[in-house]
Length: 340
Image (cartoon, rainbow, N blue to C red; front, side, top):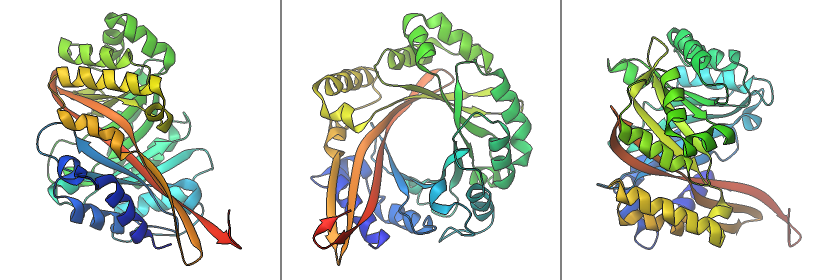
């Protein structure tokens, strides 16, 4: 099935019943253009719709290609040349399991569809893999800072992705790379019970003087039943910069069962109490869907669910809260009245 048609259907289902105005603002055209520029190979990319939970609504788009969909191919992104092609070529020739996905992340809220960030989601703990990605993404200068940051991380943490931002570097803004860390169940339990454990681990990566608001917010997320991840902007010296984020990840089943919905509702209540979210946080559950569509002998399942809530602090002060809706289309074939 045509991938643009599938994208349009996913967006329409997520945005219906007034949610476009409440969640996405006026970014539909830019997001659609960003999607079209991100197509590569033959598969439908995984999509993340990033939306704020307070203030004016807007939408940023992230499009992720899986390694198995481009493995060994010489391919290109439909709307980009240069650094993105080099990163994609490197990605497509990695060993199975070493990498998972390559993402193009767009500031479609600002109408920018030409300078996406390039992010690698890794499949293991081999440090040489992200170092190779940084070189392919035009950030060979950041390899030492990434190596230093990962070397200073607490042992339980797992650096699950690294991101490069060519557009920001070209604009003359400070140069850094972004690293996301899964803290692990044991560390999360320790943070939930004892803020000093969290402070000690943050100090290891360079945030010795983080204000209490940030630590309190991270501890609140750690006390939820959902996996905790921490995100850092890493400076040239390998230490985390003062803007830091923390997120929890959901599964579709969390939104479908009574226990999961209750835990999400409590989390939403706490985020609203921090003045980082308004009533739209209650609309996230309405974006959950999975539907099968058929056309001219082809069949696809389109789906969407809220996968993350992320809080961000700058210099320790609360900055904002966002949600990420994860959407996909999985194609099958219809033969003799049966779907496979």
